[in-house]
Length: 289
Image 1 (cartoon, rainbow, N blue to C red):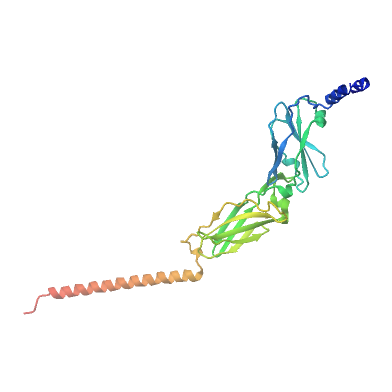
Image 2: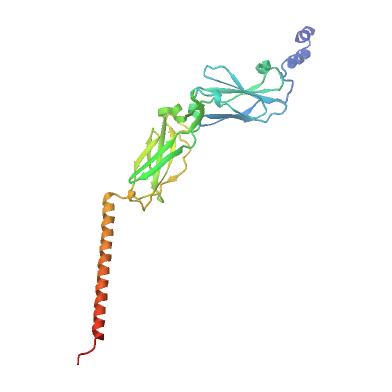
């Protein structure tokens, strides 16, 4: 058609022919490409989100990272979000997503002609947020507070189907900070570890409260996780385990002293009673003629 228009020498016909050839391949001018594309990721579970809601068309997502080929997911979806977690398992790769706007029920070969929007890049290792750590176990005995942390799990699995934790991915780049304070006190102390366990010296006989945060040491942004829930110890004041041997000896001596005083009191009371009885008997005795 363009050749015929050119042969006729009519610029207007030539322009119309070109516009006809460049029209959207879907044949529907209402198709829009995605906007406001964002990555939402916690503990490596990653959702891609965008706008607007589609009308008379659908979306397909394709993702590539590093040197990998483009992989499609959420094909012909009417939703404006897509769980892309399992396409991002190489956590240090730099990923990009294309969100294709497509008319449904067309041949898959037309994907190449569909209009699409390009996402910002995303690096899971650098950008996924770290969720709230869980306190697996804690106890306070004498002057030692012990706290054991459970690493948050990721959606990824080992070959034996068990879930990988964030420690399996970050290894030595993961650090925990314990913030602790005497119950009902405003003074707060902190200590750090790259393991899952804290042992800190505290005052005997005092309850303590604490929370934990994870830190990714290599990051400049989003370094810290959510805080764990506050937990507090509760010392059993009636338990002899809370006292040192000197304290137990002192308590025992006090108990013996109280017992001796009780015996002495009983003896004195008995003697007094006996003396009173004797005096009364003497008063009631008849006088000799």
